[in-house]
Image 1 (tube, rainbow, N blue to C red):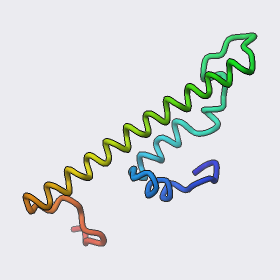
Image 2 (image 1 turned 90 degrees about the vertical axis):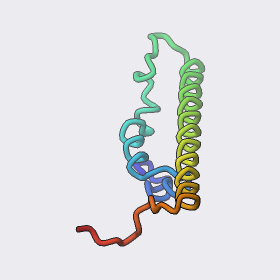
Image 3 (image 1 turned 135 degrees about the vertical axis):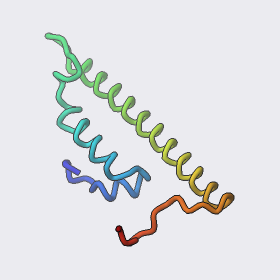
Length: 100
């Protein structure tokens, strides 16, 4: 992604989240945004320690949101697998299928 630590495709595979979702998150919540103290509504005279605490809190919130998204994704995948196996309905699009 923008920091060069992992690509969108790599993050998509690692965390089992759609690439488009990661691209949207990266656009909204990139490292520059997270480290920009003005976005966390700092007050004049705020200490470095307090700023660090606010950043840690923000990271925890984002981590929790990511965990929730991963659980939702897992639930959807499981639901699709069950529907395909029990009801014999093909839900997923075949790779390389010709479009009309």
